[in-house]
Amino acid sequence: MLTDTVPEIAAGGGTPAEDAERAADRAAITAALDRLPARERAAIALRYGGDLTEPAVAHALGCRAGTAAALLSRARATLRADPTLTDLSPQAKPHLEGAAR
Image 1 (spheres, rainbow, N blue to C red):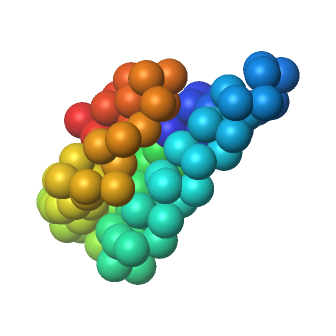
Image 2 (cartoon, rainbow, N blue to C red):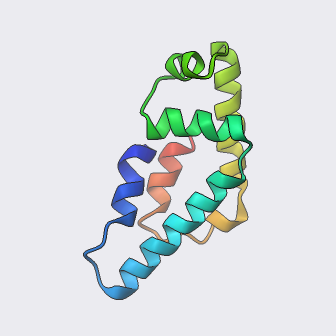
């Protein structure tokens, strides 16, 4: 889940090259999230950043559960297809893939 991974990716403590790679991964993920439409970005932030269930995301956004599910599905598809995320470090990819399901 994104809640478990973004801080881990951003955490220092490695070599300078590893820290730079984590910073680049975090910047790429943040930029990809920023390119999402506002409601999709909000849905992703609530689902993975806030660790909410889909019904809770729907409630927070003031929409039906099906609408929240569609927003999450579109956002995950957009993130999976984002070419800027294909060059993430091996440490970041499993975490992002977990959020992209």
